[in-house]
Length: 159
Image (cartoon, rainbow, N blue to C red; front, side):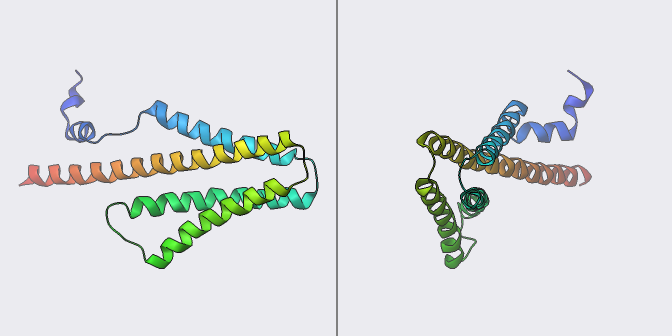
């Protein structure tokens, strides 16, 4: 065992559970791949420029509203910290983004194979957004917990 294995910071780190480096890499790669697949599908999408622009806005709206919904759900898991009105805004924004993007995809005059590609890449994007948001939040909470435990340990050692 190395000499720093008994240091206060390593003892604190061993108490706080963190995601593995492999998991974090997988989450970021998955998110990057989803964004790349969506961007590629939208860039090469045949049809009218207005349809492409609508879909780009829809995908961005879905992505940002999924991040917002993830944060809202996590913040309000154990105790309600937001107003009921904000709950309607967050959930409504997410469902509106998903519904409008789905409607735009459904009504678009392109071959079914394009619609299928865009639908699968879109759902992959939303899924990877929720996973990335959770992973980032878990890392933040672990950092906060580690800092608190380290502060308590230092205060105890000084006393």
